[in-house]
Image 1 (cartoon, rainbow, N blue to C red):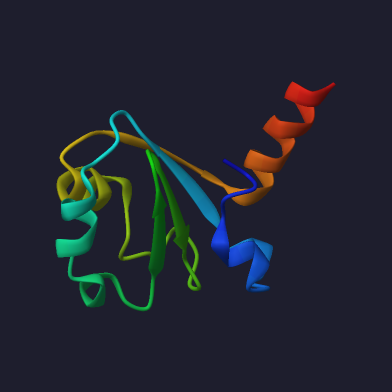
Image 2 (cartoon, one colour):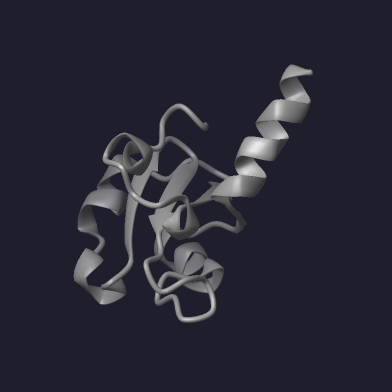
Length: 94
């Protein structure tokens, strides 16, 4: 999950990065049909059942919320900031 975030390779600031884990992997057609402009200035990338939100204004002012992700993908999700994702990885590796 950590290695698949395309925004990390693009040099996006850690503070803007998050990961949302979906309860079920959506079909590719669902991700392709989404109007990503509806979430601007937020962006996201989808990899399997993981969604990588880039929230430049932070979670409190985000257009891309868990509720909107759940509705868009027809499942439930849980979102964590990128620092938490990295800490979880560190714990798993130790």
